[in-house]
Amino acid sequence: MADPTLLILSSLADGAKHGYAMMTDIAEFAGVSLGPGTLYGAISRLEKDGLIEPTTATTRRQPYRITALGRKHLEAQIAALAPVIRVGARRLRNA
Amino acid sequence: MNRVLRMVYRLYPRWWWRRYGDELEALVEDSQATWPVVANLAVGALAVRIWQRPPADEGVAAAPRVLWKPSGVAPVLMSLGALTAIGVHILKWGIAPQADEGTAAHLWQLFMAGQLPFVGWFMVRWVPEGGRRALAVSAIHVAAFGAAVLPVWWLHW
Image (tube, rainbow over all chains, first blue to last red; front, side):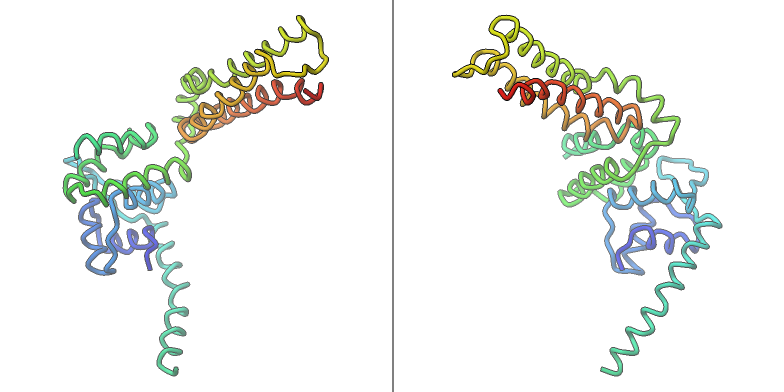
């Protein structure tokens, strides 16, 4: 799974983070190394769609948090992926 | 590396850079600039140019400036130049096809081929940033190009 928007939403689901914190968090939980260009391209799309929003920043490192709409979107994406993962895992076990 | 980074940063649309530039620079400082990072930024800039549009107010604000960029004006002037070459040729020698390609034909070819890089650059550089008005300028480029091709096609030159 390498959809950067889904990875960012998952990263922000437990609290606000700035870009570098998102990158390290995503590398830890998904094993995916997002480049800064990919990350910020996705951040700007997510902000435009109202799925994340900036919080108050005291430095140039701008933190973002997930919005209520973003949480709903993430839930829907996870719900859509769940049966695929379940079926895939079952078929691999039975193969 | 800083020089290369500055060049890559310039690939991002201005409206996007005004909003996210500081943050992105800070992130690159944190994550260290390597060649893969530079490549990722270049691809990211291209993706932003292709897939993202400025907020409506930014696009409208940028549009009038876009119209008078060299790559906005040059193709129109070159199409006019090509048309002028045709007009001068008709005034001097009429509409009958000539056995050899003369100065007018060479000028016409130069003007028509020469404007293509400007048209391409305008579409890549300014259309994503300038919104509908920049698209209208691109439409003018196409119309002017068509107007300069039409007599040549019509007269079977």
